[in-house]
Image (cartoon, rainbow, N blue to C red):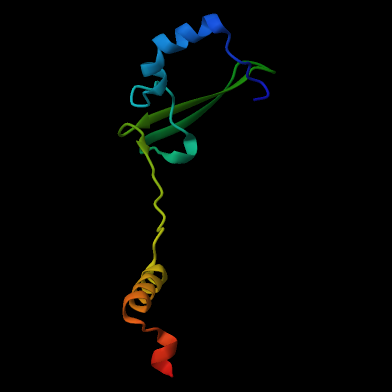
Length: 104
């Protein structure tokens, strides 16, 4: 747990009253992560201004075409080799046949 402390008895009532808000991820006001978000930028301008000797400023102007979109990554969990092994296992179980016995 490290930096987090345990709840006291009188704090559990507050958690019980707000359990739906805690468990609901659809209404989360959290910002999206930069690595999982795609931004479609229409205009990107950087302004460098100097107001004096040590007063340098940089202003950034960005206009978005649309709202940010979440990028999802899909990975194959069951490939062609897994499918072949499954069919070979089923054939060996029910038919008593295997690739090795077919070669012999």
